[in-house]
Length: 123
Image (cartoon, rainbow, N blue to C red; front, side):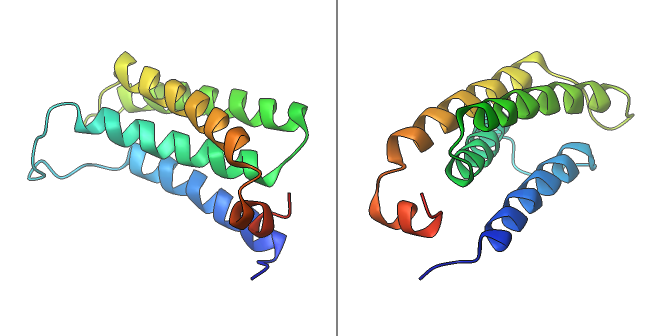
């Protein structure tokens, strides 16, 4: 099934908005504490985001621009968190974001020729 490119782009930008929102809202203290679970969440969010945009765009300069933008976004969100009374900045979160962008990029490039991905994203 071919999904319209405009919907794929919309989904990508909804992922961006979701990450920004979740990064800046108050997180309920009643959530279970699992050591480093937030780092895993950061990694998964940014790797998924980067993979999505890597599948969307085939030109290397566009992919590289998105990678740089997402790394900068992760850093800026950490900085903004430090300015709130209910969140704090963490260099390890920024590192997890950056590693997620890199791994997501590599994963998407390596999987671009898989049938359903190639068909869905019209690669």
